[in-house]
Image (cartoon, rainbow over all chains, first blue to last red; front, side, top):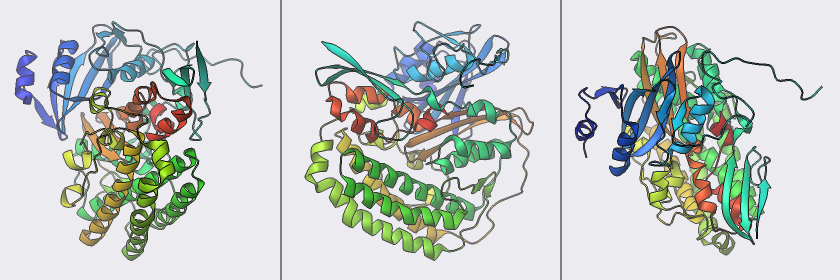
Length: 141
Length: 358
């Protein structure tokens, strides 16, 4: 399947943009589950997902896939702070989603999100703009 | 009756922090949970609060073993964003450095694998081989670990003595082909400990996003040096070793054969390296935009995403290390295996917890 067919199947009218040796597709209302199913069916490998804070309570998400050596980047945004999980479709997303939850407190709907890099008692979202840092008490005297 | 065994956070095979919680029935592993939070340093967050030059020094500290490929990939992303062209000589020096780093990483891993198998002679042999490589890297860069050779637009140091590199590489290649490969592939102890255990199928490797030697030991053929060449790789000839059995032994074989290919790459790069400048202007403006870069680190594909708002500080740095995607596959490799094989299976993927947690 070529990348134009992928774009058409996702119903995206925007064209692919080629920059930094990779292909980028902006889709503000991307159906991430449909995209993940399509990519898994084509034999693509999930490289990672990049989250970054777009504005208060909204995150820009980039799903990076490797398709036969080509890097395809699907750009979308969360609805408030929630986006569907793709872990049940692509197991490689498991740790990726857990880490993003730790960093930005983004909710991945349809799954549990145990901490990955934080301790169980730590609040998620430590990279968010409005995160309230609190000094830990206790420990060594 | 099943029982739970917590192994770690002090790792049984490598002196790095990771907890492997194993649920067993008798001696057989029924389930595994991994905990990797112990080395979290918030390096992505810190990199977004340093200027581009400071961020190079910071990302070099993601890992002590593959530090050079981190700075290379970060610089590649920034150079792509800023439209900077790297001089040809610098591209060859970068290639030589990352291949020497791969050799030190693979010899470290092979030595530890030997130790975990209870084969101390193999451990000593691998670490003795690693020493001249470390010396060579120190000769080139001034340091045995964090080399500080990459900068935006090139490298910071020229390769002053190519003949010394040739001599070392000749010696390393001879030891690998004449001693290490026969020892690892024909010795009955190694075979008994490694063959048929810790299997990862090709389908599992793809579904879980495994990369590098681990993926290639399961039949996947991806290697970023070939599929998306960077530095001088497009001008060099090399084979990509692939095995299909997906067990610990296949991972051993792939890494050993990769060491021979690395020697060949370094030799070709030394022969082809043209004279000329090693870097461009000292400071470059990074415009508004975003870029990605990928490299084939010793443990597999390393991925960087960098976005800029036009200031001297990146506004987002995302680092996806190979161990981050390889480690979850350890659970699949350990299921239904013997408890005594857990440390070896874990060591067989050459995990780096410093890279994983960042």
